Structure formats: structure tokens, C-alpha cells
Image 1 (cartoon, rainbow, N blue to C red):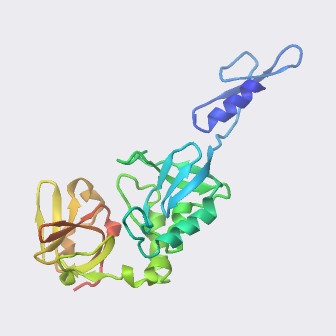
Image 2 (image 1 turned 60 degrees about the vertical axis):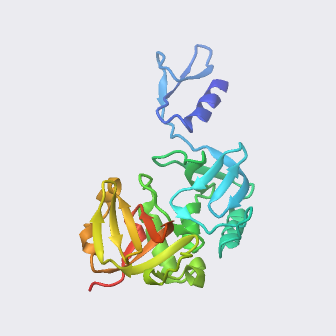
Image 3 (image 1 turned 180 degrees about the horizontal axis):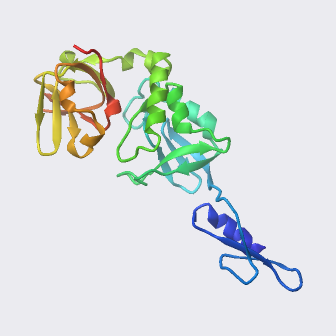
Length: 272
């Protein structure tokens, strides 16, 4: 029986396991991961490993009891105050919501294509013991925006749909003036801090070896990395259209550029 319990614990991470059961001549029950004469293979569905949340760092990052820092995939919550940086609007609300849901609770992790980010954090979708998808719930409540990083696309469709519903209902960040769309032509030398919604008409499209550039003014463009171009519609369809592009502005001298990783970050505002 002890061996059986060990096998059961292993099944949460070993999806190809097989367990066999048989009785000896004295009626004793035995289990093994190897077949024996007269043994019966058990139909056991693997379970999931749950981990206790030790702390909530911010609206999209938690720390597990074993010390792992987990970054929630597919979303971006406003920043909280840290070091010399002031909190973004809505940052504390997202963190407090996550604390109320997860502080000292247990979660199951689902990993996508990439297991960690450049900071060594585990990348995951989190589910509670009550089967609540935490990443999705944050988006539904308007406490986080969708931020898809290919090749991690496991729950992209559900996240995008939930964001549209939250934005339409003006929940959370979608009712805050700090997250209103900014016309590309209104940017000053200071740019725009943090996550940004930028609007403008695409006046020119040009190509480089690595990127496709959608120019909105002589000083502002959005760039799509060529390796993810297959995810997008025909980029030429953006020409002449007014679009909204979401992400973070990068500045080089007096020029601003916004990296677009997924088509969910671009939406057309008209058809003229």
C-alpha cells in the first residue's frame, strides 16, 4: 500500500504512469508499476499537484511556499509601488483582489510553451481548488489587461473574449482616465508611462529584416516581429486605417515605437 501511495503522488507529474494490482496466495493486496501474472491494470486518472501560495507580490505575481515566484501568463496588471516607483492606477486594487483570493490558499499551475521568463519566474495559469481560473478572473473583473506573448497561446481566446466584455462594461481599469487611449500625434517628448493605449491612422508600412513597421506619424510607429507575422491578418489591411495599439512605448532619441506581439494588441477603429 505504501508503494501505491507513492505511485499516486507521482501521477500528478507523470502522465504516462500505469499501475497494476494483484493478490498473492494469502490474499494480500499488491500494487506495482510493472505487470505481473494475474495482475489487473487499474484505470487511474492522474490528479494535479496543488501548491500553497505564500505571498502575493502584485496583481500578476505570487510566491509559492517552496520559494518559486510565479508570473501569471497572458495578462498584465497595473504596477504596485516599489522602490522609487509610484503605483500605477489600479495596482493596489489588483493586488488586494489577488491577496483575498490566494493568500495562504492552494493553487494548481498549468504551464504553456515557455516555463520561465528572463527573470527566472515560473510562467503559469493558476487554478484554485474550486477550479477558478485566476488569470481569467482578473481580466473579467477589469483588474488586468490581456498581454499575450507568443508562443504562449493556451488560453488566448478566452482571455481576449473576457477583456472585450470587461472593457464594454467599463469595469476596473477600463473606467479610469489613466488608461484612456492617447492619440499618437499628441505625444510629447515625455512620451507616456507604463502600459499604453495608442491611437492613430497608419500612414505608411515599411519592412526591415526583423520587423514590419506601422507608421502613425513621423515620430511614432508600431512594430511587429516577423517571426510572429503568421498570427496576424494581412498587415497591408492596416494601411489607411485608424487603429488602437496596446503595449509599452520605447523611445529612441525623439522617436517612439511600440512592440506588438499578438494581433489582440491591435484593433481597427474604422473602415475608411
